[in-house]
Length: 447
Image 1 (cartoon, rainbow, N blue to C red):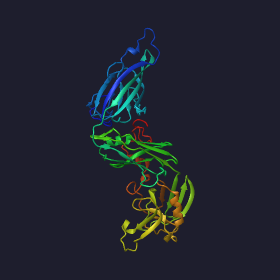
Image 2 (cartoon, rainbow, N blue to C red; image 1 turned 45 degrees about the vertical axis):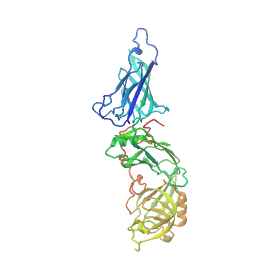
Image 3 (tube, rainbow, N blue to C red; image 1 turned 180 degrees about the horizontal axis):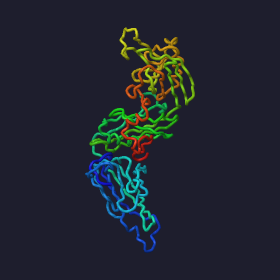
Image 4 (tube, rainbow, N blue to C red; image 1 turned 90 degrees about the horizontal axis):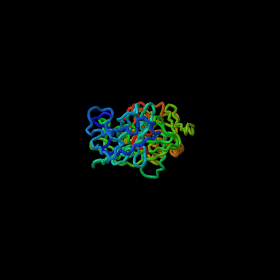
């Protein structure tokens, strides 16, 4: 790989590469045939991105694998780019395996011609790696294999602020069994902003936020803002799935002067696939569990001027009793529409105060007309049953609505109202990126 002047993606590092004796894995050469073991085997170690021009400020190092001696040091403190191992003598790399000191494999890919292996993402600082290479070389039409090993060490990141990610969802207070509905998006709140004007820094962050689910599903991160990302699958999570989120930002160079720090991992599970469908024109709420109808409830929704939002919402939380006041949504105290009520069995779906709750004062209207100020009202018995049936992350879909559609991010979890194509446009990893669109980023050492 040609040397480059500008770097993208590899954290600040000092790389030491120790060449270990390569051994021949094939049968000895025939009498009179050249001994390929005597031919030098050269491999370059580089930290320059493939898609930039110019000269590296930190030059590539070419190593003679059979040569004894101390490790070769590569000062990479200014380098940004994936690790590249390139064969510089005739032959091809048949296989390359890079692992960290714990034995975790680093994701990467061989070029089509077998001349170079490149890691999928940056290597963090303060880490040791071992690269094992299998080289195929031809001798008078006969393929022979040689095996070699490189010991690599990334240097320390400079002192300073660290970018960390608080992974969610996180329940505040009370017991937390870690189980959510199949509509629950994942979140990452960053300790420092990463602006859209620095797409490479955003790519580094996304690659380091590794999501794995069992069963496996396709998914992607979406930048909600400079400090906030959401993650969702193409469709909903499977029921009874286990989802693990891990940040590999620690030691990764994100941008000039900003390196990743440690972040706590997250594990959660999903329960049954529970979805409630409010049909505004039919004045009904139908609750499904794993595709089967378990209850249909007569309801009333928002009247003219206070229409219930349409679209897909996610349960944010539940409150056995909540005080609702008209001035919280801009209704002037003393006007005919003002209200001040203590409401039972309230299930929240927007931060601005849209609930599904008990409304015993509107029993006559439930199932026939819309009289609320935007919430979905039902009998006390039905509201208590609904409250006990749903959990955070379950889906509430409002169809045939007259109101404004649910917004994606500013009033709860409206993430599912974006198509998959729209969702992917919010990722810094484009469709052509090898690791984009998968639930398992596997972008740094595979954990």
